[in-house]
Amino acid sequence: MNMNKKEGKVQFWRLLKIDELIRGKKYPTAKSLAKEFEVSTRTIERDIEFLRDMYNAPISYDYSKRGYKYTSDSFF
Image (cartoon, rainbow, N blue to C red; front, side):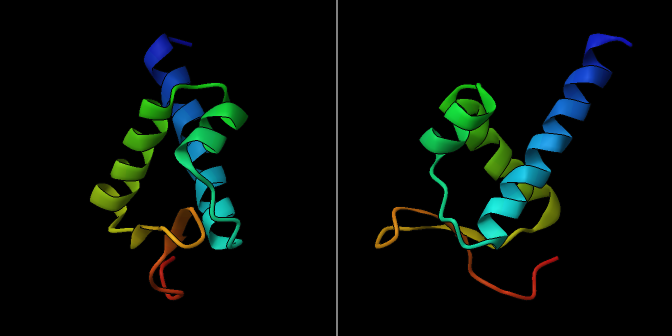
């Protein structure tokens, strides 16, 4: 398997897990996600941007909860 395909599969899995944590109202931070997935915080920030840009995910940072959340429960 070439590196790009493997990297794409890893990113897809990571995006699913990020979605699961946000959807579960866990309010993850870029730092906590980076630690969990063993990647940089910048990689997580790019993943969040990707979800927003490519899937129109209504993700925002909740300063009171100190983590990411969906601003709409209807997003799927």
